[in-house]
Image (cartoon, rainbow, N blue to C red):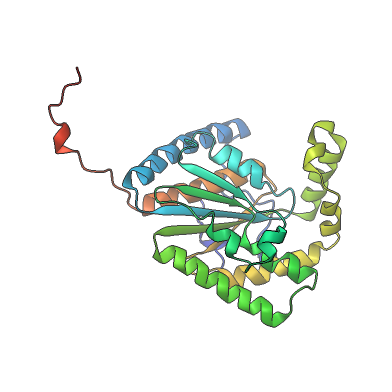
Length: 268
């Protein structure tokens, strides 16, 4: 099996070194990959049950990526067999007036995972070091402050029992073009399309540069970034499923000991 090491962001990382069309975690035919993904989804469900039963630690999975990179699809497929009682999803849109009136991390605290829970963020606090940077709304000093505040926030989560996994879904500009065009050409997908997607696409290079800067500045030991080649939807899902399973296995989750009060108890 491929190693995650190449895809974990370090200080000398360059986004251009990761090919969006790579499929290192795919094996066999597409039908075999879909079957494997279902198996991994079942394995993830079993591990999530252990996480819930242990009741002390939790997982935060952050999904970031350009429009059409597949954040919704990742959640749908990777957690297809997981009990909804153990997984929650929060989607981060443009800040509301209520949110703008407070610090940029205020809205994040309300949706951190509970003990025994997997929390998935569809976009995240990283929007606040992407859009404002590309649009020129904050200067370099403010950007550095935000990087430091994000690292401190994620350290707080880590030190209070949250395992933080951050995945940047990396697609090519051509793949985005194809997916946007499909949304335009398919009436049933019109709801997915927003004209602002085209405005952001015009600044593709600026966004790639902003992503590279934030990946290097905020990939830490306690909250690492992984870049997920995502031109292939199936590969994207397989890689993230395997990353989650490896993380849960490394946590050495243990079942709760048997309750001695239940020994010999007969239900009448």
